[in-house]
Length: 208
Image (cartoon, rainbow, N blue to C red; front, side, top):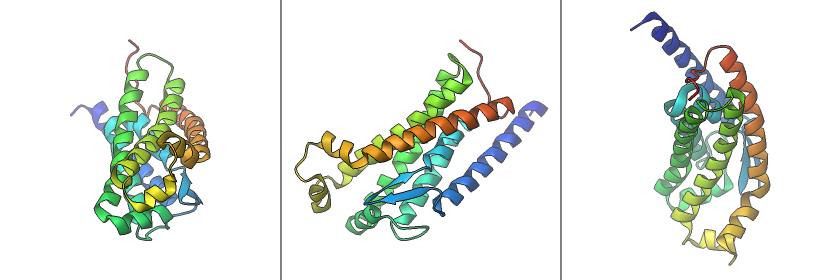
């Protein structure tokens, strides 16, 4: 292995370890979640977005997976509580794991891929901002899609939906939360991503 590649690999491992630590701190303290009713405003999408920007699809998927795992553990009261998660776990524990884990890992992977594509065509700061937005956006879309797909026919979900149109239900259910998450993730990912780029901790492909 060439010296530069070895150094870059060590830097990436250090960044990955740091982001895992940040994710765990946020997940197990009030920094990561603001519970509002059955849902929560979560800022844990931000380390996932930063990992996707700094480490690519694999890094995004790993941190997204850590995010998903901590979210699942909240279903059983580890590191906090989730009212919705507890009910979903009681209905079907396996579905609860899939619904909490898979959307976050997939979202992290896709955001990493998206950043790689965009960073070849635009300024790094803008690519980071867009990646931050999509981290929150995809997290919400995938989370709610999995919820409806896996639990849509349960009495719990039918009661929450209350006979409304599915789109209207989703917008009302996650509206304010999702908007706050998208704004915070966009701004913070742009700032942190730009700093990591100047520190040579992000590999930016040559512009096409």
